[in-house]
Length: 354
Image 1 (tube, rainbow, N blue to C red):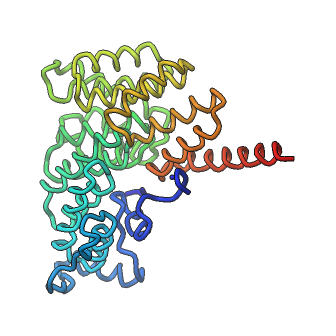
Image 2: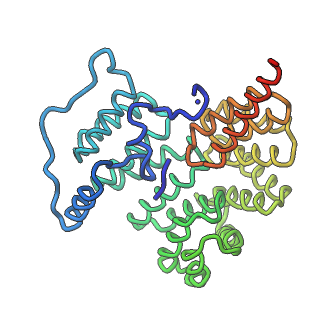
């Protein structure tokens, strides 16, 4: 479905096997000859499975027993060989060693999907969600798993969560279209059909907001998804530049669901809001608060870079933007901005030396 610091720059966290982990929406690809890969895919479709070497599982040498990259390298090799059972054991060691790195949870989730262990896949993807609350690709993958498990209310929740961040996200509109009838939401089908075909239609944000509002009206605060939808409404308000309404939604959720993923997501939203409207001291305070709770939120690092840049802290801003880019390489706009800032910083440094 999709692709996902130079010390704080553009170098990915996992150098030896970055290419394998970067392809596919859960960061793992098969690689190899394209025709052979297609043939293997087609054979699996009709129930013919590739033979898997069932010899003893390889493990890292003793001196690398706690080296997460060594385990991930082995896991990726086993994935290439389609030995998903051994790959699973390696990925489980990765999440044991680095439980706060979403990439390993995503990899484990994809591995579970390969083995048709949907409950395991769902649990892995759920573990990844609070580690980057604005990862639309991870959210859509989780929603897709829920959809396959006939958890359509959950799938709707995660698809709309993704749309509150990116209203033009095609996978989310396709997913909502496919489950609308199961949710007795046929009234949305004409608009969903348009957005499935062209997610950039001007109605995208408006329809997402309408679907959020409908849920909030029809459910009370006791509903497990209520406050999550309220945060989504806050994000959609923010996209419409209705900052007062957005701030109200975010602060309500923070007050009523302290310590929750919903509250964390609302705080990340406040970081973006404060940065956007130039309330830089409030942004700095909220950034510090969020980083104590969850240190690797890409959007928080990006907004920190913007605030630092406005304060004239060029080098820290460059470092923060590099960190954001390394955490979310799919944000191509951030990568381009990093290149522009790096070029300008070097030009200024060269000018100061002459």
